[in-house]
Length: 222
Image (spheres, rainbow, N blue to C red):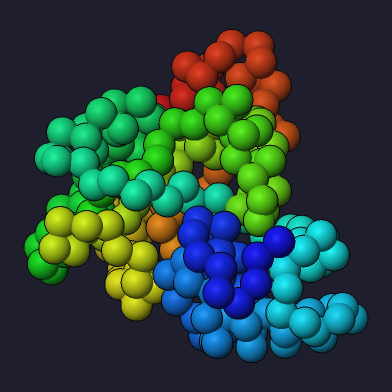
């Protein structure tokens, strides 16, 4: 359970879920007054006791929304852009090329982006699925990260990763220019997330992967 006064990653995940529902918050990991008010409003809107305490019933209501805010939020900041290349070397070459363009567009506007997640194994996806508060409803094989078709990025400000939501609204124009689909345009917003456009459902990709591996999936987009 988390409540007013709680701090940490679980609070930040809960705040991102509230943000996806239209609440004006920052995902700073600090369960303060604004988060308490938003939580109580969320609980009341879902027929729950509005006590501001995020326990099993509140999580269950949140999970029913099918929100996917599965962008992983690392704490450390890699020392150089070689980290980006390490991540991009593991994803589809077309995605890597477009992600580099995205990073270059951001740099031209005076911003630094780091790739925080690229290819995610099925085990890593299931581990993420089991996190609480829930950050994704995608099980193994249900995320485009599992096929190397999506990456997450983060802003680096003064040598530290920043999760200031005001920054992430800028990604949309860079993604469009780079030929990428952006999670900020989704019904359930995931602003750090970009992926190759016009992807089919995982229900199409999974059997291809199971039969021929990731290279068979990638061959569909060459």
